[in-house]
Image (cartoon, rainbow, N blue to C red; front, side):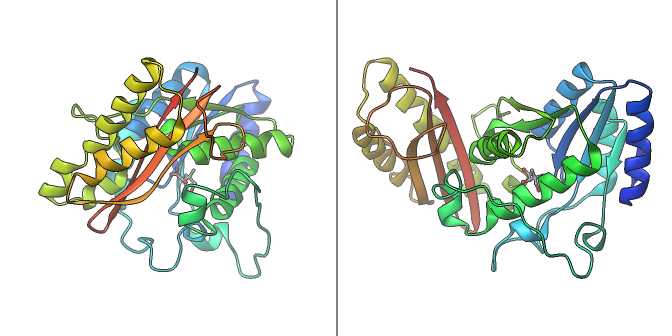
Amino acid sequence: MIILRDISSVTAAISQARREGKTVGFVPTMGFLHQGHLSLVRQARMENDLVVLSIFVNPIQFGVGEDYEEYPRDLDSDSSKAEEAGCDLIFYPTTAEMYPQGYATFVDVERLTENLCGASRPGHFRGVTTVVTKLFNIVKPHRAYFGQKDAQQVLTIQRMVQDLNMAVAVKIMPTVREADGLALSSRNTYLSTAERAAAPILYRSLLAVVAKITNGERDANSLLTYLHDAISAEPLAQIDYISIVDTADIKPVSTIDGPTLIALAVRFGKTRLIDNIIVEV
Ligand code: PAF
């Protein structure tokens, strides 16, 4: 496995692989890899000849007062984990390499980014879609792999790829969870022992809502009330949002009818956790 820091070396390596007729699978990350990221690398390994992973803590997707500075970073551990999972090349650029002096171009997906995390974190998705566009242009992957945990992110990227005619297949892989249901996230390391013990309430509550839908409940308001009450019962949980939206436009629905995203963001102390379930009815 090789680690490259400059864009020209990455494009040279990828052009060579593509000239040889190899397919390229790509896993964009911000590093501090966990089993969720590694499941994406393993999937990419199964489906492609060359597997590329990027590690870049993208400053433009963090708002003022968010955790850009303290976001966990550990290249040594990341590179051994990535190699073991089957990665061939890590792209690990500097901020100056990605956003040189005079940088002025941004990609903005409208509508799908208005609600959920888009409302709580203004400018976040503009930062994500801009960096993902740049990474796609540099890596030129045939397939790119994202986790369902960041459901709004991946639905937005799928929309962008379709709208801008990008020649990449976006693959959504299932959320990887701890044994007690907590979705894996690099930010879980911020949780205190008490917060970590409380956090599985999120997935438990989502599963309870799915059970209600399976039993015939279709009214989004009563499901939202149930979720609010279940999560508020945990004293360490501070709800940022709980929403029930359609998966096409990420707009609130009043009735569960068709593919529906049940998504939430909840703070435990200084840590903001997100989770979701998609139901097909
Ligand atoms: O999901 C992430 O880790 C980031 O948002 C991504 C897609 C790597 C863009 O910085």
